[in-house]
Image (cartoon, rainbow, N blue to C red; front, side):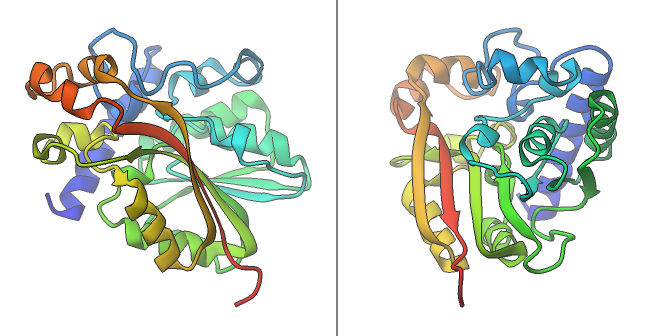
Length: 274
């Protein structure tokens, strides 16, 4: 699928997810299979009760992530944070609380419905040091060297041009700035039927990078101190839940992906000096 066609599909699915939340429903991770009414093996149990209680219910309901980057990114007071693909704003709002009034949290999203939901959640939360921007993660609308920390939650895998995403992330980070994202990562070969599935690309699976490829792309973009830390490894039963309704032969595929897909915390640093 062409990159622009993929963007249009992702935008459509995420826009519908935002509208469901605005209407009082829940979103599913990466809009994978919201009608199943089952436990989503990727999104479940990502945020603690304390974090959830700090924010509007709609922010939590719109969480489409695979991790909790704000809990792992070691944000400091005064930091400027950028969330790539900020969705309903949960990680932006949590980041804003952590960096305090002397810091700032930006959220970048290409979907009008998600931006409207995020701004409404910001209003309900009463948090001022936040700005939501419309744009694509391949073309970040911020100047060079303007951000201390980049976070993202299960979004980079959705891009059809990951090299561009990582190059842009490197550009907007300050020297010594940190890349600290949650993403789905692959270890080992993945059945071609998964890679070909548009629904599973939208579901954060088909577009996931293999771990070494992720490391190589980060290094190519200029990053150092690269690390990939698994936070949740998915088993065959998780795959059965996730692939249900995708058109894939679940019984045949699930055993082949045992332990190959994982949510991971991906770290890297922009060198302090050129």
